Amino acid sequence: GLFGMHLLDAASARGLLRSGGVDRFETLVDVGAGPGYVTQPLATLFRTTVATEAARPCYWRLRTRGYHAVLGEGLSDEVVREVDAALGGASPEVDVVSALNVL
Image 1 (cartoon, rainbow, N blue to C red):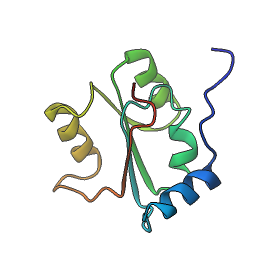
Image 2: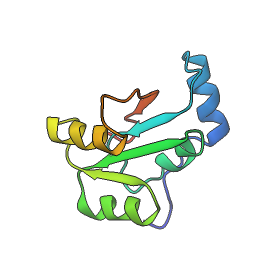
Image 3: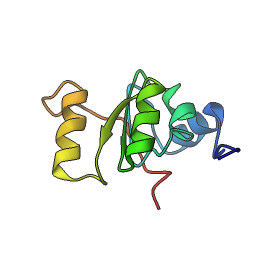
């Protein structure tokens, strides 16, 4: 659309996460990332970001924006395996799982 979704900026996200007890900002998994409007400010806080998305056009948009994107619905076994592989395998530690764009 003409106007992107604005949920929060990076500073607000950091404050919200810190108030919730997050003190490590290494790895983010954004479930149902859509075209990345929410992913973008969150990703600036983390060293590694993986975004999942069920809609192929949004998946490709995430990829063109430079995110490691996984195509699939929700947190199915296949999606979890692909996220795990994207993060180097061996059950990597994830600091934050975001689902802010999931209806």
